[in-house]
Image (tube, helix red, strand yellow):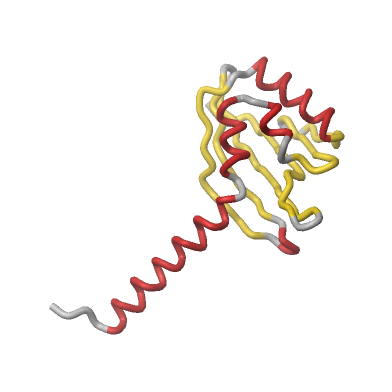
Length: 134
């Protein structure tokens, strides 16, 4: 059975789409690894000069150094047992967003990570942890 033109075009479109989705998520690979391992030090390498951190709706802006200590405290109180990004979005002006699921000692959290361009480099601009429904 010979593939039709429509089947070939659909297959090519799906392959292109998978490459685009993979490229969207590449910037988040080291960030996800740092969250998965509970390493505030590794995570802080990707922070911008200021970072907005949110925990269950309570959001505050911190310097990169302060944000590292806040994340260290979070990870020590709630060590990760698992983490995965499951959705990526390219926003306006080079902003990228990722949604993930964090499992830890005190339960699961929906995680939203926002990265933005800063002098040609993508940096973490914000991370929001929202307690999941058990």
